[in-house]
Image (tube, rainbow, N blue to C red; front, side):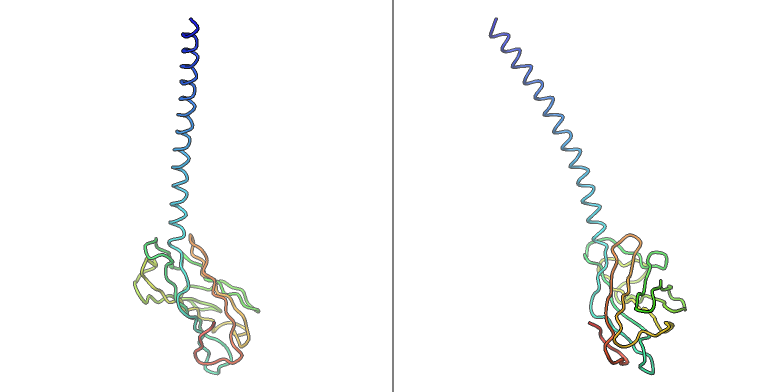
Length: 180
């Protein structure tokens, strides 16, 4: 009789342990699926980000008293990632200087405007393997972007990370200068 009671108690412990084990495994599987979705979303987000590739060029005005244009190149961080929208509705380009802080207009006129020139590829989306030249025109700034002046240009896509270009104009303005 004692052996039967012991067997029943042992079976009850095994059943309860298996129920708890199943619950723990099920919870672990569900949480790992959620973690996988979060990790994949993070990979998708970062794989379509842009980086500055190459130098930053400053083009002086005719009188060499200020800078008319800033040019730089952008490429995707990862060659197998997603696309980044560089259309006028997909990105905001901002200029910040000591005297001005403004959003530039796409291909328009005004104090600050920007345009894109595809070196490799075409369209409004920067896809893996493509390279785009950003041209920021500052000829309408008052005062002009002049010598010994620090500036920042931010390229802010709607869904990706911001590309920040921060440079200082040297003590002498030339026709074309590479900024470091």
